[in-house]
Length: 337
Image (cartoon, rainbow, N blue to C red):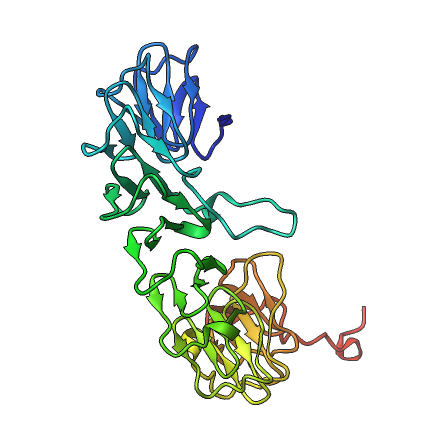
């Protein structure tokens, strides 16, 4: 697995090896080699991030994917080693990360990756989420039939899991992942590991990461949006949807006072949480007091904006825009030279 030296992880600074902002004291620059974003080696040691790994056997150490590694004695994860794992039969079941947030160019930003995945040995299945402590054993999971699916889902011949959580009443033979949030087995629909009780699975379809519909209803996460008109409902983006009457925002709630027809995200080169309709500007669904929707633009920061007269941070007006409101001098009133 080829990992470049980069400012994000292992890199050289002033002739010394660093992981992010931390110096690897004692590291040998001449023989140093990053193995991935967690582990590296030089001629004497294995390193876990910025610390020498005193338990790892350098000669037999190998990185298995983005979150697991092993040597002749132990299986390692970010914060330690898995005491329950049999090192001789341990194997990974995926690359240890997934992502569904690609730009139009197909490139993936570093913070878009979810570092988690499944592995097994001869008798057990493991799941590790790098940000949630140590790996867990999936009780009852069969390592002989278990396989990793998309977006953190996995299944064996008898059960389906989302990460460490088992889905209830699910048929693994007919189970399908719809996106990172929703799935179905043809009889029931699920939001992550939770059943969507009122959903008609036969007609269930996803609209976005948080939104879905069936033949009768609109759903935000696992809950119905009872006011929404299914026939005219459409997504504006992953945060907001609308029908012929209303705009729906966080938690599927009606955005009070918003004009459904003209409501839109304000385009910007940077990530923007500003929206507008014909009457108002909004930040994360809250009105930006006094802002002019016709002249409003995003920047310079992601939570900053400006119209023809004022500067704003999130929903608050902060100070007059430079040059705004100044009157041109009347040349007829100037004294003669």
